[in-house]
Image (cartoon, rainbow, N blue to C red):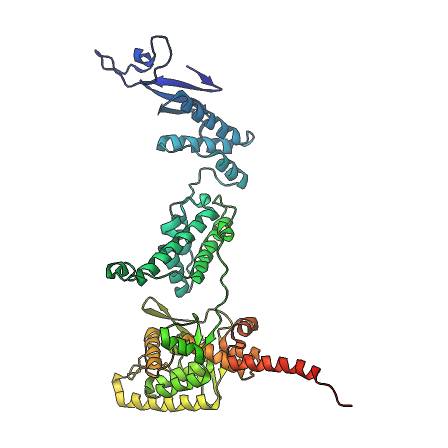
Amino acid sequence: MSTVREGSTFKRCTCRHPDTRTPVGARCPKLRRRNGTWSSTHGRWGYQIELPPTADGKRRQARKIGLASQEDALGELAHIKILLETAHQDEPETLIRVADLIQTALRARTPLPEVEEVKRRINLGVDVRTTVPTLAEWLTEWLGGKPGLAEGTRASYAGHLRNHLIPHLGHLPLNKLQARHIEAMFATIEENNEHVLECRESADPQVRAQAKGKRVTSLSTKHRIRATLRSALSDAVRSPELPVTVNVASHARLPSCPRKKPLVWTADRIAKWHKDGTVPGEVMVWTPDQTTAFLTHARKYPWLYALFHLIAIKGLRRGEAVGLPWRNVRLTDGQIDITTQIVQVGWRTITSTPKSDAGSRTITLDATTARVLKRWRRHQLEAKLAAGKDWVNSGLVFTRQNGEGWHPAEVTDWFNRIGKAADLPPIGLHGLRHGAASTALAAGVDVKVVSAELGHATTHFTQDTYQTVFPDVAKAAAEATAAMFTAKRTPTAN
């Protein structure tokens, strides 16, 4: 029997005495060869070491058997000794907790705790016995502990957890997560993107079917996924009960995500779209003439025209327009207070306040838009009288024929349908808002006014995104600049 400091190693087997059937243990002759050395094929190695007493003063040992070699037994014995030495000798409570940790691991037949991890917990002042949750456990607890989240934001976070973070990273202990793991997740997501795109373009119907119902995860979505993880890890770093000191999501690399600026449907772009279906950008807007053509066609749909007119002229968001109550409209003053919005979560909708302080705002109506809303109000009141008790008193400005509010997705469907019927190039409904902003700036409206009416937090965003969207505005600026140089080259008369 060999001894390592206070501990010792030994070898045992499971043989029993042929007469009494009692365990032979260390006395089994098969444990050694004829020359006295240990047999490599019979018996298993073990170790034992005296641990510090329990909190109530009881003696205890760390004992384990079943190891393949004496070297393995000596290695674990040395590991336990180092763990005990890690605890400061002048802090008996910490020494007891480290011993508890060792004893728990041996009883559960799990690996001994890592020395560096125990050191880190001691230095952080965290109870070394605390079980570190997996990322899946922490993310679930983190989201459940945020009761004040807007429902749309909660749904977005939950989607990131369910679709990406937990499937790819959830098995990792929270304190083992590294930036390289996060980058590997995004690499896998990109591989899935390529597979979906390849399947969509395949001539084989069975291959195309593999992409059915699957979406490509955009770069902007990847950035939002990382932001969700970064927020969860920030709370983990702040928690005194968790041995997490670094927010590794902040160090995970992703390509920069430049703001998508709107592109206008010029004649050349429309010609190419007619030829091969190419849409040159993710965010497209109509020219003022194209928007006018859309609104002219939308007049055929009196239950929707005023809604689309207000979005196109004043740049309301879809949820703001759909959720606008009459109590916030002052037609005599020509003003509308934006204080509510309808948010779509899946197919379900909820009414909430705007996300930011800037989103809560008052917009001023031009005379034409005020007249459109007044005509619509008369039309709606006439329909209410005709419907009688069947009228739904939603209190909303824009409703169906029975007074019930519109579902946001249905408004989008109608917008796409009317745009197609008007033979216009495709834009998203949000493109009407972009067009309103671009037109206002092109008309010379002060950027501060435009920013405030759109509900932007800063004028920098408004100006950077929408300035000189229309080619004729950019051309006018270029000509004006060139004219200054031309004027300098013209000789003055004597």
